[in-house]
Figure 1 (tube, helix red, strand yellow):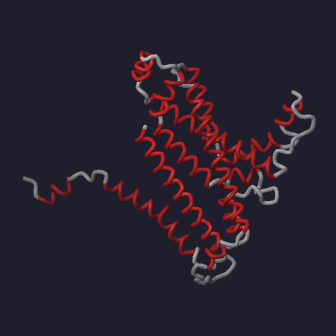
Figure 2 (cartoon, one colour):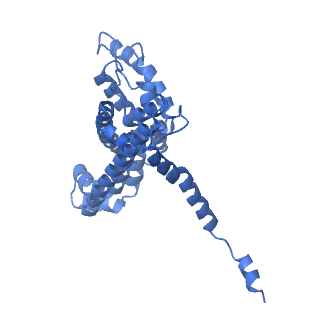
Figure 3 (tube, rainbow, N blue to C red):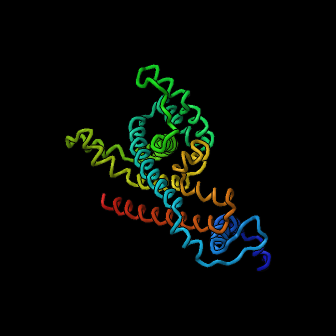
Length: 297
């Protein structure tokens, strides 16, 4: 009969080691950086100086009078709202159009998802070449007679903001299409058959069957679009460089400039904490609202 020690040695380890590894990685790459950034936000840390001092809430009070920070927050909110609305509306439209099982529709769904798998830098480089004054878009518009002179898509605040929203929407539409396509597949066909037997038309079936059934997909898409766009940096860095005249700087772009151009690690950490709190708070609020909407539907 095996002893207790032998039985203990033969006992399977199960998933416990993987759990500890996952927990260790979570602490090392998420919890520690956040706590370290929080501590840095209470200092005047500068990489060009050997020592840094504790300054309390000075960095946070400085944010109250920082006009560039205020402008970047306003610009970020505008882009977040526009991109989230466009991505969800067009993504749902594409998902409805491509909700078929043939090979051709599968290929089209794959092609639509390509912008999501590309690096934001690559996407921005492609669109920057298209949107220059002698780029492809102006050439097409002039050829078909829409404009007589090249449009400066990145030269003014309004056009640069419009161009930026269009490019970021192009990326997030891909993600929204995939999520909505998966949600549409989860709708039982029997519900559509029952609605048809009750005489419901296409619009009525969408409003009373499709829309309520894809509510969880809507929650996921809206919240992830919000979070992704709040962190927007790479597309702005390549497409507009924050210009013209710093008018297309997102808060994420601004804090990177503070940290690695102005060497203000302490103040940029305070801005990072503000962005983290803002993103988490809005994501939590929107998630709760959409969850309650799911329950009502």
